[in-house]
Image (cartoon, rainbow, N blue to C red; front, side, top):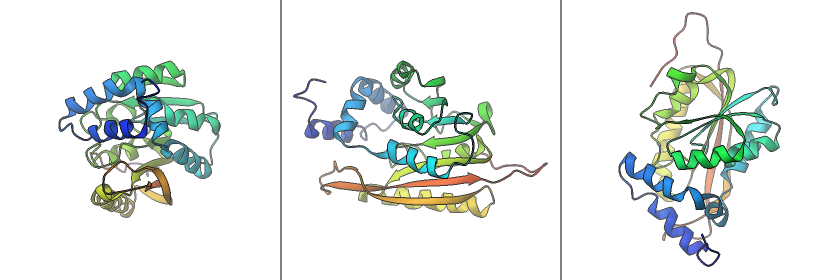
Length: 238
């Protein structure tokens, strides 16, 4: 994108158009066309979620970071892995529905493995059940994006004692989704699947793009620790 086009108003139009695609195919097509300009556009948006998530998981994780295996779900171009590397993490596997985004992530050289997968349609558990010390999903848990049903998948692919980091927005358009997300997180805690380590509410998450909001919108980072799985017990699956 040329400098004169990389303005907040133009980026705002791009962000809003991301929510127009109703079908999975339309959403993937949008992200494929956005991949080349994604990093520059979210910088204009002052999108802080990757750094905030990495900071919070780093604060909670008690294992050996250099040896930890990290699954970056909806990894995009690799912004989360870039932030996680600053905290000493080295082993990354990325999953995304957009092949163009995955190509950008591949160019970053941060990932040992990258996989094209449609969240909510393809099962991560069948491939990686109980495989990762840290699982993150940053940015994709919002209305019109990823179904809340994928949360159980994230838990399933985490090792016992491992951490799951999730983010969502707290702006008006996403409040209903956020409430449903938090209900699912609590339900899974009551089922004994994991325990909440912390919830961090952040005031200045990113610049607002809807007509109803000005300035910055808020967001939240959730960190959960998967509980030890007893021998012979069965975990819930999607």
